[in-house]
Length: 296
Image (cartoon, rainbow, N blue to C red; front, side, top):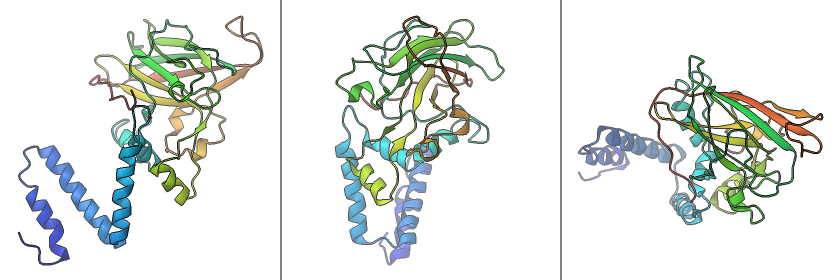
């Protein structure tokens, strides 16, 4: 079909997609074209701005490596990742959910850790943290045999793959729930941290005069056949960046209760104040599927 004027462009493109054999693929691509074309019309996009946008996308690809995923970071920073997460959990956002962003730092094959053990793989300064978590189904029954991946940043705000002073897989572990649906582990209290801003995502944040900090949190990924894989984060409740998380990952359900203690700790080698975290997760029945690791 020959295009006569600007009004012809969108319907012509949509017509060429009509032969797609997958109904879902057809639905997604047609919606993408309609919204992208409507966006260009709404802002009256100039050719120079279009070129800047294409260059921005190209730079995202170039910035992505085996240890850093700029595409995920950009998606997180515009709230798209959180939107998709909430649309797919908790009744499409109608009810509270413990689901949250996977984030760019999950690694597959974290070390198996005994229930009640430590995920410290190298000396890591900071106040001790003892976490006790329960995983149950929607009816309140505990779920045994859940593989729970745990990972978080150090007290200086760095994940182990970002920090040469930490041992490989430090502050990472995989713990399996017992008959009572519980896991417990020892670690250190995590710290908030700035997201990397040396790429196109950082340019965008600077142009918007936005902070680039994440509040302190611990990541959890719970996997067991017969249940929908739960990916979540539990945030430190007194962190100064809770209200301004650069990736919009904080929901009310995910603010944990990190309690400070000054008395005797569960381990004799703890000197000074320590923290405890108690949290209950709910896993929905469904298909168990592991995500694609954003880094290797």
